[in-house]
Every structure is written in structure tokens, then in C-alpha cells.
Image (cartoon, rainbow, N blue to C red):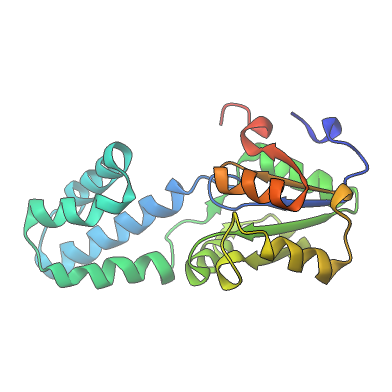
Length: 205
């Protein structure tokens, strides 16, 4: 799907952040690298082996088990979980996060057409803001309005969208939500707003 395929009467576009505008693994893998570097310094462990194990665990078992797997393997102090968790919230990444190329093009076309772009994202607000600050927006950042749904009510609850509508004087018929989770779908349905799966905009990245 291209921007030209969207109903041109749509004037406001709402996006989730993770795995919609950029691949979240690009954030997480840098967190794992930083944590591994920390352990290499404090515990004299092999940073590359640690990083590889964390990435492998994430890919095969999911993020929630990553710390437990490396701690079991290397038997370091469990109190390091605090460092691990803090990095997720506040880490300064070695590399900028890059938007999906197709999403960058889509956002640029929306801006050229003088339409509104919103990010409504679930998750810890401090962490989500940290991600947003470290994305390479290519000058688009001044056109973005961000809402952290957990500060009001996490999606699929529609409260944040209702606030957005009221804040900006929008009509549901002129809006579209792009996301990739059931929470996004249910939120759009609850609000009576058209929904598009973000994958429809993505070619092979």
C-alpha cells in the first residue's frame, strides 16, 4: 500500500511506535550490547558471548526471559537486573534508530500534504520517550505530536484517542490508525476509526 491508496479525505494519521515506524529489535539489541559491555567491565565476562546469548534468547524465547537466561548461564549477581531494567528506560544508544524506509517515505508524504501525524504508543512512557528521542526522524520530529497511552489508559482502551480528538478538534471520519497489534485493532474499533495494518506499507526491509 502507498500513500496514494489512502482515502485523500483522511487528514490525521495515528501510528503506534514499536515495529510500526521502526523495528524495536534495533533498540533492544543495543541495550543488550550496552549491558554486556557493563558486565564485561564489572565481571570480566566476554561481552560478545553475552550479547550473542541475549539476542539468541530474545529471538527464540522472547524479551521477558533474556536476563534470566544470561544470569543462569554466567551466575552473576541477580541484583544486576536493576541495571538491565534501567538501561531499557534511559540508555543512550551507540547508534541512532532508523525508521523503516517505507514509513519514512509515508510520513514525508503526509507532511508534504499538510496533514497531521500523531504517535499514540503503549508502554512505559519514560522508555517510549527515550526511543523517540533516539530515532533519526530526518527533520520530521517538528511535525509529530506524541501521546503516551499508559499515562491515561493503555490501548485498547480508547481514552487516549478521545483526548487526542478533543485536543485537536478532529472528526473520526477524517482519521486513520496504523498499528500491528490486536490492541491497536480493538482501539480503532472502539473509537470508530478506520484501521490499517502497518505491514501493508512495508516492502521487504
